[in-house]
Length: 426
Image (cartoon, rainbow, N blue to C red; front, side, top):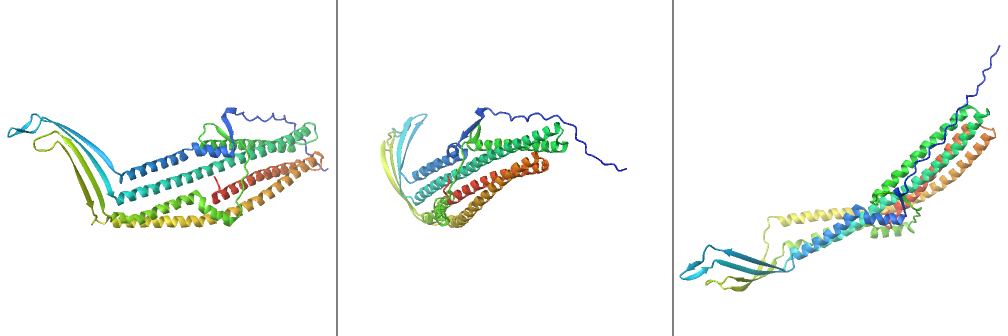
């Protein structure tokens, strides 16, 4: 006698309780800012930007200090001497008990080539400090822009996770209802619950990623509360590659910084002659002192000092060698940067084109995946298929939506890179 094995329905299981809602965040802990507000706050409050601004002030102070070396300076001295008794020689007091000496000295550098060159070079350093501050602000704006876009991406991934969780919950409730009414089976019920729990875990991961990106943005803006993105961002690109390359070579802060350094090293080399030039210093001294029989009580004297450097032990040769090497290094770095500008701009244009096409394909794929998920669910409810097709279609729809979010972020990041490459941002 043959025995036919029949599958028995799994015993009904209690429906799991509703998924715990995410813990609400205090409204005061998160503040929303727009794209431009984020860039402005970072430029005003970021410590690196503040330090760069202070470096400009420091360079201006050094410039004033260098200029002072070839400007006239006036100094005064006052001396008091108390002796144990007056010095008398031949009945005449040569040194009284109390002696007061006062003088004013005026120094006027007439020819001071080294001092002149030092002030010129200090002015070059001031220009370098300004260019460096612009480059630092560009770097900060870049970090803020990328982090702001990361917040937007986290929001999109959170939306995808919420939608997937709700879809999985609806499917599970239907599968569990079929099981409890004797129309379904335990496998479908377990599979639907597994998909729901997986989507809930991914939802929590998306919430964590959002908090982390908000925290990173707050750190860049020097804020104590979490900062959220307040609006979407639309970044436009420059008109064409060739004009963008020319503009980038003129306005990119990193290129301008290298140009300022090259100009400074060129000036250093051109000013080597000052170490061979003579210096001429005029001094005028006016004095008044305690009157004695041997010296007048007041007077003045003028001195002109001419100094000609003949031999310095090889210091000028070392200066020339060091400055030539520095100038050559600056030239090589600038040339490399100008070549890199062309590469950056051309590659950025192609990346933007590729990411736009990828985004179009991802959106089309997401539409198709969502349509397939709806049809699979209808087919399952009609009894024409199992929930394996439903779970698979839901996963594909979720993955397709996630890919759209990633493609949108890639497109925005590519446009940001293009603006950075051309010097149009910030």
